Image 1 (tube, each protein chain N blue to C red):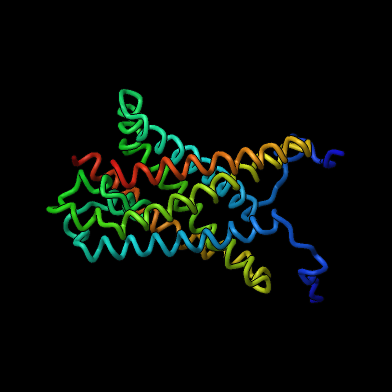
Image 2: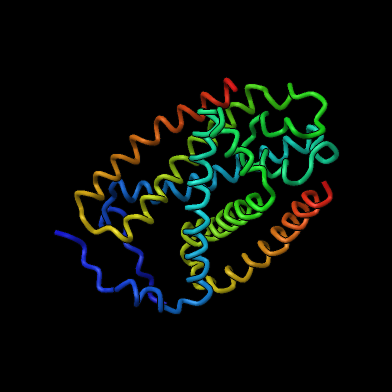
Length: 141
Length: 124
């Protein structure tokens, strides 16, 4: 089969190409963060102190509020700075990945260039407060 | 200048893309489900009060958990397939096998989790 790969210099590299790469790399980053959260939960005793639904909840968002309803005896190890930073990184990646995905779906049904551009800017503007609120909640609630 | 679209909605709905098309549709539905869930979850936690309490009660319901876990797990597993095939484009020749492999991972993992969620909901 003939290869049809075009070099980046001929293909051009713009913001949308960057976001294409970001979507894939942020997915891998979130896989890494989820596995860190899952491994951490198992090391901290999740196997006997939590049910599966609570482990899943923690895996996707390592926030101490997610283990309040479990048999975990001491919440302190689940609320360390390490887990707050892991959760914050997850929020930022997930919000950027998700908002970009939302825009990708909308753009399939939207052909007006100025509206696409306006929504791209809106997505970036929405990302910042969403991350800020998420990080505020992780550190203060 | 607008982008040209030569496919009507009716044609789009009748398109028979089989397995790969199904994963594409489910990836979109799952992704939208996660975006809506996460955004309202963050906002309701921030706002608190009656609205926040009501939304949290909805999120903790086992039916909602089964739906959102389908969205998240399918999006994650299908997403990993997309990432692998996109980063190593030679593998795209094996897309069909990759999709079979994906379902072989998804069905048991989701099945066991859904079973446990229902069991703990019914058993208390």
